[in-house]
Image (cartoon, rainbow, N blue to C red; front, side, top):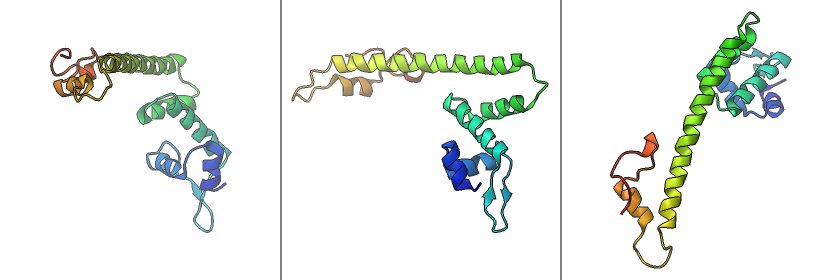
Length: 145
């Protein structure tokens, strides 16, 4: 099957398939006599695995580790679990940060009258350096006046 067909079958773009090949997540495809990439069932299965791992938020580096573990029939499931638990911890940190950002923005939006006056607590909060409790936004002055 050619790259367009593989893309349609896996839900990935041809560009992503070529990229995964270029960074060695996918073995270099065989070529037809006319030079087109050719993918087999094993390639499609691997691409589906990569897509599902990416959909779960794993980084490309983590996907590489997962692929290596997936192919290693002598692997310890503890190694796979450790990688998953590290990813869960990272997701939990991101969720906490995003929740703190949302809460800060809700507070700023609630303090805004939303009328025709030029005074805007949202813009003041951004200007003064909002503080939401998350590491990504804990710089600047504390609170909004």
